[in-house]
Image (cartoon, rainbow, N blue to C red; front, side):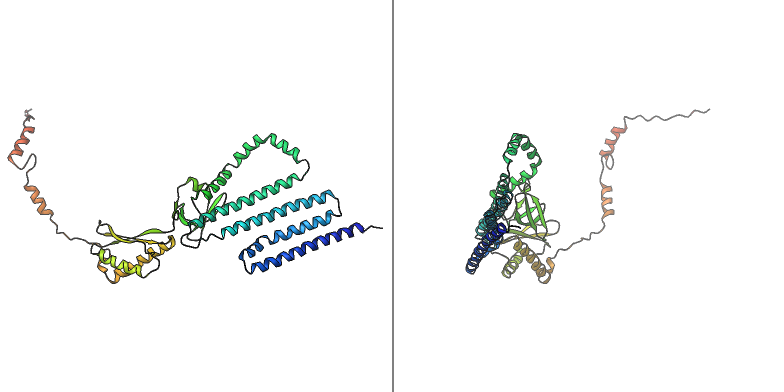
Length: 383
């Protein structure tokens, strides 16, 4: 007859342990939900750590219930590995929550957000480094639970020099990108939400990782560049110190245009829009060649997208104004009709003396060159 007593003890202890874990999970869930009604951080904590926390408690409870009855080393080893893995997941979730809470204090949707963008970039990279470090420590801890790892480690250390050289050569580009990513995060060269021009593309820095940078191009494309690109290749950062920019609008018009009238119209155009930030506006004639006058207008805006829209708005308004109020100032091509003076010029040219003809002095000069050449006449003899 089979003895069911050990299995009954196992089921009883396992049920008690899991029941206690479920009761604790229920209490913590109620407390967090009550706190989430008043604090936003409680809701973020619940969304981040809910699953790893519950799984960690269940694994620990199951381990305690099984260990109280069974002395099987393999089972205990399996529970130890599971506990380390789930515990690392929980620690990574809590670290991610803490860093996310710190990142939430820095808003990037405000005009003066230079410090906020720098902190967002650095905290995002620190979060990734912490997660990677936790994963490495957890993996090392799991490997140390296996017997005989020390002996394997000794043999690995004996050949560490060769392995380090091989690994360094194999991962040279990867390691370069990792160090470049760390340099970008803490050197403040670029930040998340910076406006840059890279590879002749205008866009915003959307994400900075350990190995690559994602640029959100203006037409919703994503330009993925290695981190080393921004440490070895020149690029433009339009928001290095502030997001405010100065832009130009150029118009090629006829000489009949009046710059003073255009300045008056520019004031009226800027008064009708909220795109202009009110810092500066200038209208100047920068060139006047080739039958046209070049008018350059300089205006300012709070950021690059606003400046682009403002420049387009000014062009459209001046095109409408020129057609309606000053059509004579529109670019025009002029042709000057001139009568044919060829015969008269040729006659005048014929009256003028040359170097060797046309006057007595010229003919005398010519004789000096021809007099020294003897001219002999051939005599024909009769046969």
